Length: 81
Image (tube, rainbow, N blue to C red; front, side, top):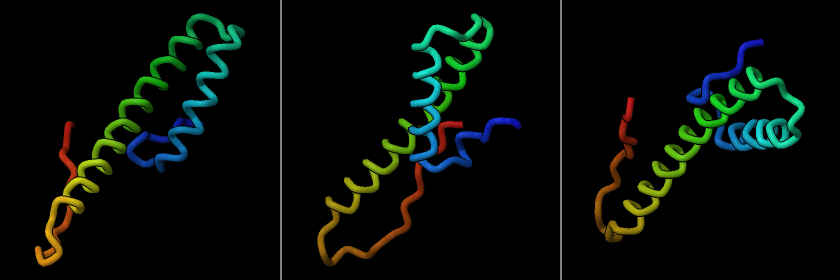
């Protein structure tokens, strides 16, 4: 089964898969080719997870910086792609 694209995964799913990848890499039982593929997947997941956290942090900062009488606006995260 093909791995889900990080864009389609919940943040919690990303963390769970990252944990599984780290455990597999730390075990030292993977062949080099498999370990490199897992490492690459982990980097992709970590980058997307970091972007998700950054977007959430920006949204919180916007919400906290607005005064109580300011109109609400939709938050649109930056697109790095």
